[in-house]
Image (cartoon, rainbow, N blue to C red):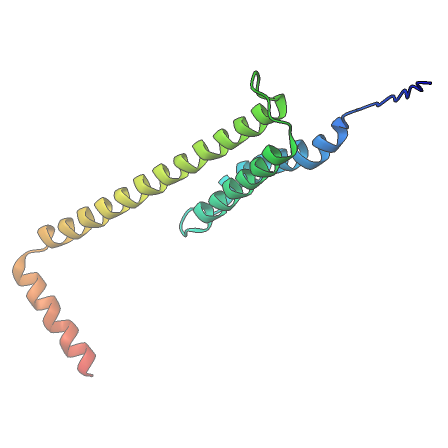
Length: 140
């Protein structure tokens, strides 16, 4: 007698899990990146903040790579979404670097222009007499 065994497996994906774990946090990182334009550009806070956001998204991409089944044919839509957000944040980082470089070089040029204008507009004997007045006033 041969007996048969019949088994029925139901495999389902839980898309809400991917939304909660990946889509919402990556969207929040994008919003944080956009809000970083309100951070003062004088220090390095903006640049370091954007690098941290970029690293957080790359960590989420690594976790996503481990969770999703590998497919040879097509990339999953959630992977394309995360990659697109990663690209936008990377472009935003490059834009911040470019703007801070332009601001720094224009500030340095402006300081040179002011320094050269002050020294070239002031006659030599006025500079010497002004220096003497400063020396006398500091001694009093």
